[in-house]
Picture (cartoon, helix red, strand yellow):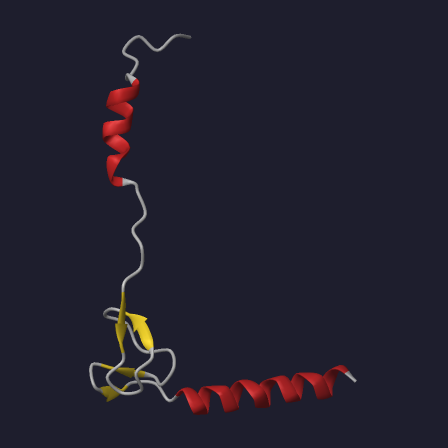
Length: 75
């Protein structure tokens, strides 16, 4: 079957003009100075907008303990 009202290349490309990806923009963390994405928590120290939101040290310790238990169960 043939599409009677086929969209031309220019019409198709005009519709897709908003599909381009943009480069990520980074901000400097006010707490530790590391780069992070704007409007997102710093993955280095866990701070957002000048206050600590997530305790990354506790998360790392919890992950290590879980891996340790998993390794003990495998043996």
